[in-house]
Amino acid sequence: MLRFSGSINSMEENLLVGETWSVCPLCMKQIPARRIRRENKIFLEKSCPEHGSFETIIWRGYEDFDGWISGIQEPKDEPHGCPDSCGLCVSHLQETCCLILNVTNRCDLDCRFCFAGSSHEYSDPDFGFIRNSLKKMLEKGRLLIQLSGGEPTLRGDLPEIIRAAREAGAKYVQLNSNGIRLGQDRNYVKDLAEAGLSFVFMQFDGIDDGINQKIRNRKLFEIKQQAIDHCAEFNIGVTLVPTLVRGVNSHHIGELIRYAVSQSPKVRGLHFQPVTYLGRTPGIASEEDRLTLDELVHEISKQSEGMINPANLLPSACDHPLCGFHGDFVVDHNKLIPLLTRGNAPKQCCCGPSAADKNREFVARRWQRPDRIKSGDDIPEGDIHDMDVFLRRVQTHGFTITAMAFQDAMNLDLARLRNCSLHVFNDGRTIPFCSYYLTPWNQK
Image (cartoon, rainbow, N blue to C red):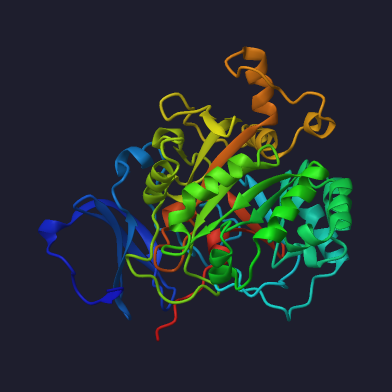
C-alpha cells in the first residue's frame, strides 16, 4: 500500500537508521520523515496529519547502505521553507556544478514517460530574454551550462544561443536532446558545432524499437544512430541517457552498455536515469515499480557479465550519495578498463568553491571528443599496458557510466535536496532540479 493509517509493521521489525524531512505527496506540505530498515531493505516513512501515512522503498540491500552514505553531511535542522522557497537559500549545502536553462517547452515527441510534461503548444522565450538569462547565469560563475527543454533543437536559433553562452563566458555548453533533428539535419549539427557546442546528452532508451515504442511512442533507433554519426562527424561528444522502466528496458541494461561501448569514441558514456514519478509519468509507483540505486548497480554488474564490477561505481560526491553514482573507464577492444575503484578514489566533494573547476575539467576530458580524434592522426593502437598507449587512449576513448536517481513527491528526502548540485535557472532563481520539477500525486 502507498497510503495507510497507523503502522504497517510492528516496531520490532523496524530499525530506525535516519531522520529527515519530506513532503506529503498529496498536499505537498513539509513533514518529518524517517529512514527505516526492514530486514535488508530501507524505506522512507512519513505521515501527514491530513492525509495519513506513506512509505516507499529507497534501498533493496544489494549494497551496504551505511557504507554507501558514509561521509555525507546530513543536516539535522528543520529546513524552513524547503522545497517551496528554493532559490538557492542559505541552508543549501552545495555549490552549483551544472546550471540548466530551459530554452523551450515544446517537444516533437509525446513520450509516455516525461518528467517535464512538455507539449506542442507552448511558445518559446525570445532570444533577448535567453541572452540576458545567460549573462546572469555566467555572472555567478556557472561555467558549465546545460541547454534543455522541451526539445531545444526545435529552435532554429539554437546555434545563436550556444554562441551567446560562449560569448557570455561559458567554458562548456551541453545540450539535452532526443536526437531527432540531430539525426535528420546534418547541417544543423554542423552549425551547433561551429557555434561552440561541447557535448550532447542524448535520450536513448534501447536499440530495440519495441522499447522506444513503449516509452516514446515512436520507433527511434535508426534516427538516433544517425544523430550519433552526425555528432561524431563534427566532433561533438555524445553521452547516451536511458530512462529505465522496470519490465520495459530494465532487463536491457547490459545490451545498452555493449552498444555504447561499441560506439566509442563517438559515444563518451552512459547516464542511467531510473524512471521518476512526476510530470507526465503515468500512475503512482508501487514498491515493485521502483528501481533503486543499489539495484541498478547490481543490474549493471550482472547484465554486463562481469565487465563492470560494483566497486567500479562510486557514490556521488557532488550530490547526496543516494542521488547517483559514477564510474570512469577506458575502452579497449570493446571492453571497459576501470580507472577508479571505491578503494582508491578520492572521497571529497568536487563542488566546493575551490574544486568546481576541477569537476568541470573532468567532465570536459570525458564527455568532449578531443581534436586528435577529428584529425585521425593520433588514435592510439597497440598494447594498452604500454604507458604511452594507455595515456593517449584515456584521452581518446575515455568512457563514463553514471546515474542520477531523481526524486518525486513520494521519495523526496530534503537532506538529499539540500545537497543537490544540479540546478535550474528560472526567472533569476537557481533551483535544485528535483524541487523545480516536483509535482503532487493525483489522489484518484
